[in-house]
Length: 371
Image (cartoon, rainbow, N blue to C red; front, top):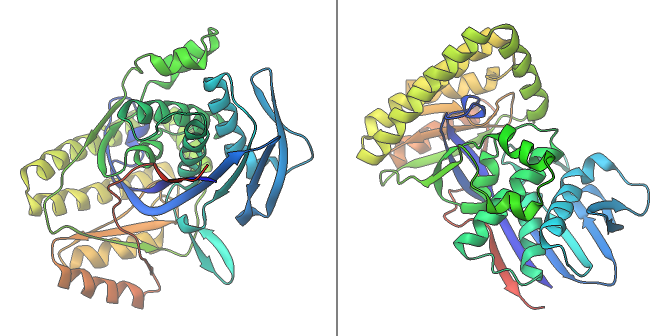
């Protein structure tokens, strides 16, 4: 059995604006991983134990992957897209037995797994595609292989999610560390696909607009993660924001430009080691997201996330939502371990749930090779 894993993600700055071309975000990989186990088999067999899906058979024919029996399509849509995309790229592959586990990217509440906001679907797509490639002789540790995995995973996730998202979560899962990310021009890539280009051609081409670069942050950075107790639906929120953009394009563009400016200055502050400026700019990013919440009517900064932000800021730290908002996680950043602990105590008093996770310097990786 060959085992592969991919880390989850945590957005540091640049939420929502990253959906627009040329707008950067800062995103970190976190050590809450999705695990994939794969081995050769006589048939395509897929299991997702946390969803109660065991030994579901499928078939790959005419570049399409389909299930042999009735299944819960929604629970399997990312897995199906990942398999279909990987097999389309490989062109020749033997059947396999694939088990995908994402419990570590979730939290258990009342004996039920809840989504935290660590990008579990993106990490699963990355992990599954990487496992399939590794099984077929691709060394996923190589830089060029990771670039291929990013593109395949971005395509699979983009289509499974209804042509939504920026794929920053894919980048975090593939490359690890803290990175600066700018999205690719999805329209140009889709046009190439619709023109009849093969997946191999799509992967080998340069993707317009795509930018991924490691970002070093000053030593002593303390990052704590808190779950609000509510899970959010990012695709639904993106659709709501799309409606706001259409009807209020000037307001939308102004807010996105403000976020872009803050993130660019934040990148410089990280490179220059300016701790005070990092804290100030992270809080400024939250204030703009608060404005976007009010202007758009999309429930980005919930009351719990606002509470986290205000407690952290009052203590001299930075506190903000992470990702699309609407629930999920918030983060607190400072450069004092003692201050970090003090804020944790205050937030736990307000029923914000501390999540034990750290920045993961490794991206997708092979855990073993016992095939």
